[in-house]
Image (cartoon, rainbow, N blue to C red; front, top):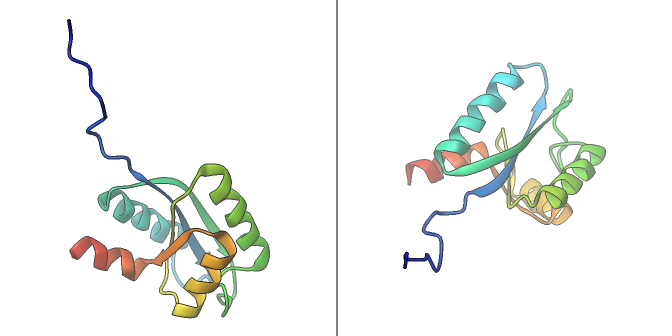
Length: 117
C-alpha cells in the first residue's frame, strides 16, 4: 500500500497584479517587465499587468477612476492577493487604492526592500 500525502508541501504562490503609468518619461513596458521579474524572484505569481497612459499620475490614487474600477474587478475575478505598483506611492495613495480594490497594495520600493530583507 502506497503512502498518501495528507497535505502538500509545496508553497502556494501569492497571486499578484502589476500596475504602472505610462507618462512618456521612460519605457513603461520595459519597467513593468523588470517589475515582473522582481515579483517572480520574490516568489509571487503574476496573473496580470495593467498600464495606463497618463500625463501625470493621479494624486489620490495614482491611476484614474476608470482604471481603478477595472483593477478592482480584475482583482476580484482573478483572486489577486497583492497589487504591486511600478512607482513609489505615498501613504495616502496606498490607503486610497486599498480601500477601493480591497486588496493589499505595495510599490516597487517596498518590493525591493522585501527582497533584500
